[in-house]
Image (cartoon, rainbow, N blue to C red; front, side, top):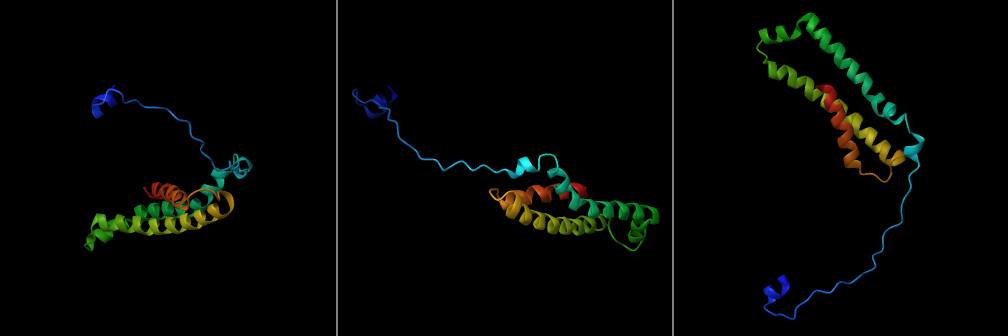
Length: 129
């Protein structure tokens, strides 16, 4: 009815057809079933050392009042905390890159490198804050 009004012809109609579509073969990856409960451990393990170092340095900074000394010398609070964020962003970025390469080559060969890197790097970025 809509087609007939659009074309201005009362004899217009739509016919339905079935077309064959080929799909690629299903790929079964057994590695996630092998890693069932331990994959989280291997993903978090490389982040433990930089995270513990970050916590130690923050406690050391609070104990020695280093930020107050820097403020007296003219450093702004933003610059002080931005230096921490940039430093640990670079460290977590390198760790994320290495982990993404290893995961894409060995464990998840059918997954996207960029998505793996982004997920791992964002986890590290959350650890900073």
